[in-house]
Length: 514
Image 1: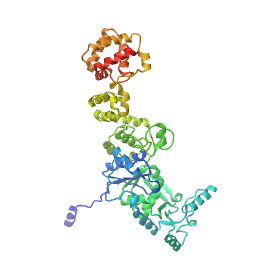
Image 2: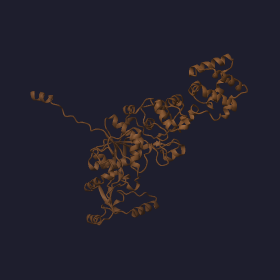
Image 3: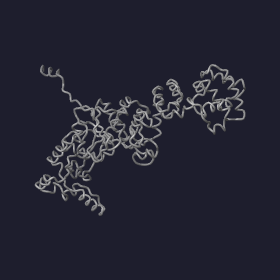
Image 4: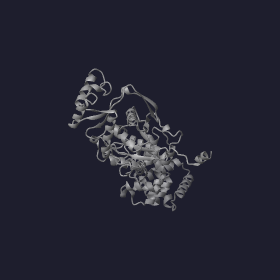
């Protein structure tokens, strides 16, 4: 009894759950599509919520499709979006290197291990021979699949004697290593988003895992790397769902613990069927890349805030279970869960993306907005106005803007005397008695010293009342001559900003020209 009591006081061994580790593993074959950014984002949100690591791995096994500059583009895009990786190229950890081309020496041993275990085999079929079989099957109304049905009739180590196989390998003949898919097996797979999935192995082909040039295919490399990098969750696009059966079988063949899989829904076209493409953006005038790539404008260059991009991407295929639409990155981390990711595709809405950007623009400090506004306008247009003046202008017009690039068209009259007047507005607002009214108002302004917004508004309204005029007789034509159009914020804020001298100048000009 005493011994039992003592043992009960000893610390109990606890089985610690492995640290959450996810990876985003794009191929450097071109720019990062906005769908790829969303995949990276969901990985980031999931792992940060669970106190884990976000890994960037560059899957460049397909050297024929490698595009110079694509890897740096991917890194720059993630950084601009505010979802930096914890490990990856340039942030080497103990699991590196993080480019598959630099891990080339690893993969052969694992491919050969599968052969030793009877889970894979050598195949010597030439592309020409395989093409012949495909065409032969097509001519008979069939589909050629390299699997249990015909593998013994083809040129591989299953149909050849071991001596012949070794002889051909030693002679330098090209080969591939294929996975040996067992027939008549019902695979029971689990996806964190889609639930239970059953696959009949008779429908699967024997995928190529490794080539004699020393390069693995995606299927082998990603399984080996995920295992060695201790990836706990694989969160990737729906297009990889058909590969889930093979990948689970590979884990089982190696006798490794498989990560939890989650396949994200597609981002769909704004109109019609199918997934969002570069062509959709070109046709409808919105970006599909985070940063510009060659002739394609990116979200950054189009004037979007990274926070806006992250916000609208998060709600493409995921919902928080509330009516909330505006989230900071920290709020997204706290709210995110795979359980609330939709199975069906999410339709992309270009107008909604602009709505998000407009919100973040309103929330941005006027000084921070004035800086890019000034930088994007020629000095002569600003007419020597101070940064403080520009900030005040921004404060008055930004609620009407979606992008900083909208600012000039919304505010040019703050900096320059209008060169002309909106013709439709002139026809509507310039009546027979307008010149007399504005001439009298001009005299009033010439004898007024206080041109603060409140004072000039009070002076003008008192004068209108004293003359027994309607506001419609005075205010619209006054806006027209001050602004050149029927637009802008509070008129007396404008008059106060441009000042007495400029206001009088504009009234005189209109009286002389209209």
